[in-house]
Image (tube, rainbow, N blue to C red):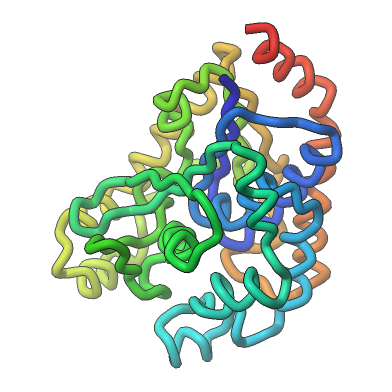
Length: 285
C-alpha cells in the first residue's frame, strides 16, 4: 500500500498545501494519509479533493483576529481561534466538503499527543462532525499557546510533540511505499526546547508530557534519520523545501503565505516525474 505522511509546522504547512494541490492536479492518489498538526488541518483538503482551499482561506483570513492573533490568545487561551478555525470557517465561511471526504474512502489519520501518558495517539477521521474537528484541533494545539483539548475523557495537545514525522506509524498501518512531505529543508536538526522552564511550570501536573518535550529534539531527529534511511532504501519519497521557508509558525502577510505555497508547488512539480515512477511501483506491487 502507498501512504502519504504530512509533517506539521503551523503556517509552514502552507508549503505542504502547495505540494498537495499539485498532487491533486496530477491525479496522485494514496491508500492512506496521516497528518500531524498543520499536516492534518491542510491534509484533509487533499482527501476531499478541494484544490486551492487551504491557500484561499489562509490568505482571506490572514489578518483576521478570529483566525490567529495575540488577542485571541489573551481572550481565549488559543492563538488560533478554536471555534472560528475549526468550526465556523469549515462549516460556514469556506465549507469543507464532507461528502467528498467520506466518498473518497481514503483512511485519514491525525496524530495527537495524550498529555497524561506523554505518548502519541492516532485518530482516524471519519467525517466533519463537531467531535471529529475537535480531534483536528487537538492535533494542532501547540503547547503554551493553546488550551488542552478534552475529548472522550482524554486530554490532548499537538501531535508534533511526540510524533512530528509519523512515517513509522504509516508503515505500521501497512504502507510499504510512502511519500513524506517535510516543512524544513534537508540538513535541519532540532535542538533542545528553549521554553522548557515555562513548559515545566505550565504542565507541572503532567510529568510524562514534560519528559516528552524534554527529549523532543532527540525523538524528532531520530524520526528524521528514519525518514532519510527509508528514502535511501527506496521505500520513502521525501519532498521538502530546498531552503528555510520565508515564514514561521505564524504569518499574517498574504504575500508571504502565497510565496511559501508557490515554493511547495514548485518543489512538487520539479519532482513529479520521479514521483510518478515511484508511485507506479505501488500499482504493480
